[in-house]
Amino acid sequence: MESRKKFEFVRWVHHMLLFFLSAACIVVLSELVIGPIFQWFLHGIPYTFPGWNRAGRMVLLVLFIGFFAGTISWYYEKRSSGR
Image (cartoon, rainbow, N blue to C red; front, side, top):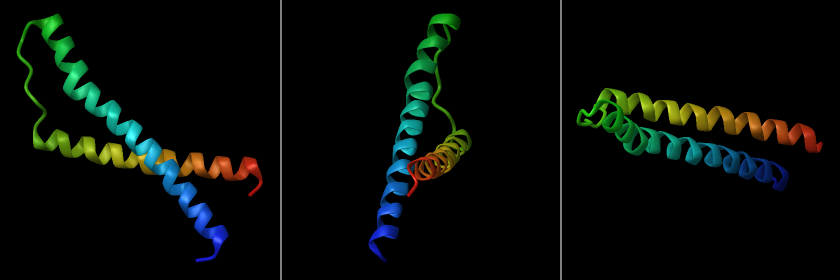
């Protein structure tokens, strides 16, 4: 792989991982920390962790957001910088 393509690939992976990790943190915080606190404070009922079906959908959502947003931000940065 020539150096320019390798550089672009590394930049794309960087953007994709950045958005993947941020989306994963948001989902984990909302489902496992903030959601139970609001449910307990507002309704007074015990919280149950999400089932496997919902967890699978959350994983797919995080993967899609990371891939899509990372690719869009990489492409925008590439176009605006003139590379």
